Length: 178
Picture 1 (cartoon, rainbow, N blue to C red):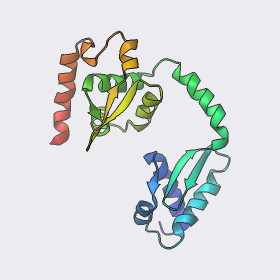
Picture 2: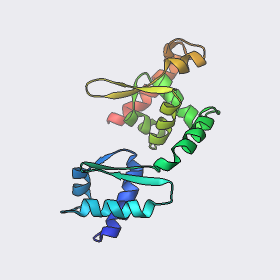
Picture 3: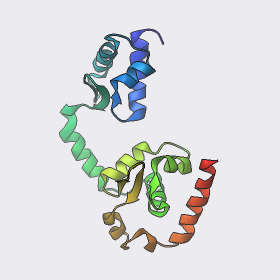
């Protein structure tokens, strides 16, 4: 991975997997960049993504992979149509783990599922079914009141077999800390 093109290819993949803004200093360290190479590989990625529906936002401090801003209205329409539909089995599974898990973290959720839940969590957040609850050192995923009302309960503890399923989840999580 010596050439700028190789670094740009890897950066594109990395930005995709992270699905968040990446700081310039982090990029420079991870990709062994010097001088103006951050801007150079950012511009290579930007050029490669033209016409793909994706774009890269580059600032002095960071870089992010985003959807092409010109597609905003169409994407909003598609997302609205999708969010009105039925949950996929994977989304339902993830939502169940969050509802029964009682303040579960993303890392705990990934551990339970055995795969990254980043994109599923994003969909559930966008649909208003879950929310993030932050305290000083952790961010927890919790079901929204709207979701709970939609299934006929006021609190997660009122879900069917709540205590037994919650205990199964916490038993499975015991292996995470070993």
